[in-house]
Image 1 (cartoon, rainbow, N blue to C red):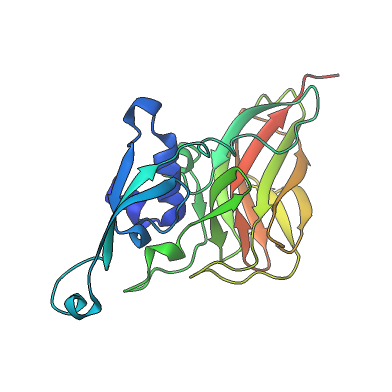
Image 2: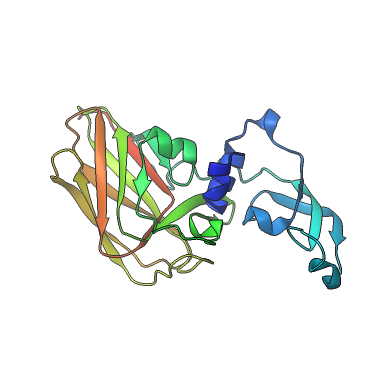
Length: 241
């Protein structure tokens, strides 16, 4: 795991581990559990090595209990498709927010807030678990993202945003009111679509934007009046009628 991934917080660590091919996945973690920032791939704890509190101030350690934890991978790749895809539509591109490789492939950037000395890495991404579905995401504190999607411009385009989650996560802004998100063409500034974002209540929510693309690679800018959370952008298309 690179320093860049680790420094982007729990969501990015989750996405990196999820992306590992089966033959590279660890069978166990030997870890101070809090270091990972999330427990999505943790199974049973097999060995604990707790230190008495009196030793904490005498040693340079990352925690008070290094553990040997069995890895579980049943939740990997559980969130890589929209919750509902209408018959005839198919996913043609996918931006997995907090996955550094996916963000780079889509020239993604987001207004996450200014990084300050001593900020915890958990400020920059998060993981939401809903039943068997797990997804990493980010809080867009400045209300804006920029990314490029790849489409067939001759076909209708639907951009599906996975948002929602909990109203509050540690080190993240509380979001408890609805908002609106406007999508614009980064090239000419024209508005492409807009939609209401419901207030988070604890569940994933997917919001669809209907738009037309005039070229195969479309750079998009999002604008909202306040912070919002995003986990995924799915590009779905259907054949021309």
